[in-house]
Length: 428
Image (tube, rainbow, N blue to C red; front, side, top):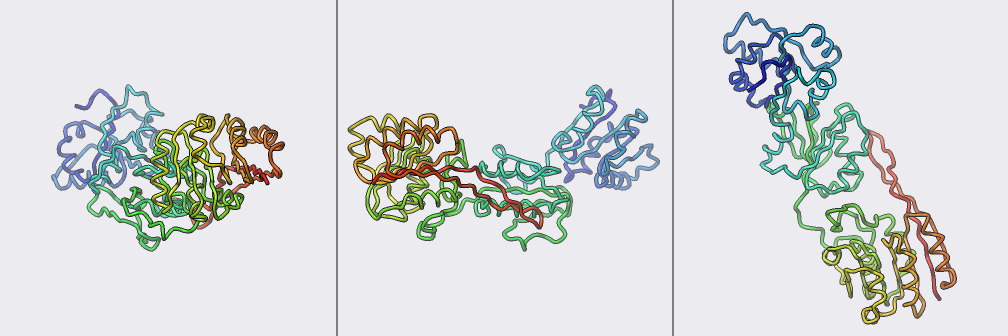
């Protein structure tokens, strides 16, 4: 039951059942002196009064569509006030503004279903694992961060002043994840003229899309691209299965292409991919040189299963996948014997142990070999250089910085990827 001692009673309304709501709550409503809310809800309330033939009401009506001056009006004269709000007033609603301006002793909140709860009910899908983000008055970086975590579903509250759902659609495409998600728009949820639309192309957008709308991205469950249809190398990041607890933690496409170039892959031989992560570099190396023998080593729990799955997706077969600490593997002679002397070595993900791993790898090299070490930290470079210089015939370092285009309305900005340093050692 509502607390009638409170001055301001904030009521969330599921607009699909507004009239039945007014009927069920007419007693507390008629005790109010002032009725406020969005114009669409006030109109529904006035229509209900008219249909019920209720006349000579004492209400003062105030629209909240323009919040400028609204709080001042409430403060100017204390009256028993009803504030109608669509959905939950404390979820991107008027509740936050009221809390900032009135003590809680004067406020009572009564929420209804949020717009995104209504949206999922229309789709008939559970939403307990859904993530959400608002773009209202914010830049696009929060969206980029949220979608790069590859959520199973993401609710986006778009900013209609920046193109609304079209801005979201363009962002998704610029990040390269358009093939991973279904794109749904929901307009005027709960009203008789609500519109729900699945968007498959930019041409699908209604020309009259309502400012009152939201977007839901839902992960597609579709057959994967067959290996034969993938490029030889430079495969899109989204093709690879990634660790669910750290999505996006993989060597990005632009850097992979450069590392593969630095490796100067032979037609035959053995390649070690140490700290292989999801296996992307070594697996693409096999696509370029199918007769290579690939040994992938990574310590993260579950990495073996992920690399096996990515091998299946890319249509290649590593010779050996080891899920264990790299230093432990390199020091166990029986295992090393089965790995064969490498002709190419990639060393990634070593962190503070990188120099120890490089030292152990150098002990195993018996013939001509190329080592490629991608680094994201400058601090590691000098230490690794001092280890490599006495052992290699040629040592080089390069920095690589890539940018990806991100749409901003009708324009494009460049979003930087993390810079990567590539240390390359050649043994003749």
